[in-house]
Image (cartoon, rainbow, N blue to C red):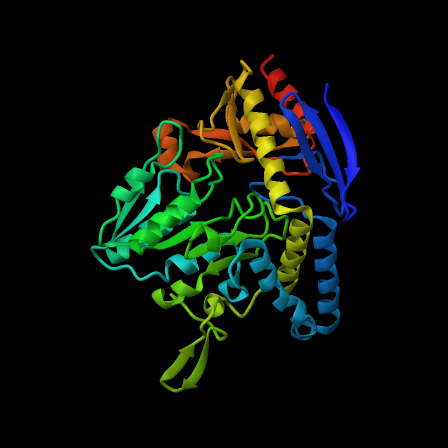
Length: 412
């Protein structure tokens, strides 16, 4: 029997401590603008936005409807500029190290295609790299003639750092990795990889779209030269907006693959001068309402406490894995090294897509991880697809117990 205690923090956020067999687990209030329909367990796809984010975006859009986009943006200039400082406060580095993008994949492409790589060079990625990133590697390698090297995982499903280092040579131009992909709960040891890259003086690009708002992060401390994040996942911001981090020390080592009107000063018919901060990669045109929504999401993130959020999410991941591993009707797909709140599993008697549909009919909304999203890793592990369950801090432990009961009953 679960025992729940309701408490309240100094910011007025409802917090529930649930006593389980393995100790207490915290649930933070979702503060939703509208009541959720069912139990939302696809936060690795897109989280439910809190009331503060919705209200901020609605207020801005009302103003834009009244006075037009340019005037509304001018009126909100200070609030829009403040988002860069909020990113710095949340994830380290200086505010000049951040730029806004159209999403995590957009941020990744702008950074990756700006790294100088020539024929005969090589880049290093990992066994479970996400499809969008890996396709960019193949696309550019086909044109430029460089080699893509893959650092494999050990038997526990974690990257082998010794093999990773052995892949580095004097033609290695980039180490590019997903911190935590959408297809398992394995979190790569980003700091240790950062130390290796610094030791060998190699640029390091970290795709943090699944760890921003999920783990407590400091990109400067991790040691990555570049990183990407998105608003719509664990940060609980709007869809269609992301950001990129570009450390000051790395700015002279990249060559922007494309520039926009705000990327440079136009000096004459044959002359221009690039700006010196990360916004050299930023497009002028974007959704200002979404940018303000990201700022509001960052406020919520900070008020709830990054360290507390990480503990809450990892506890949910562990609770699900521990219970699913004990169920005869279920197969845990996550490798042994999995630790985050992204949990992959299968109902033994059902295809993942069929299980997802049946769960949705019962009000539990999960997703499916398919081989095309992480081809190399899934092929090596003999996996075609898996249920992906990704709870957030607003998912109560009683909701997880209800899900587990439904999974156990599904094959009866």
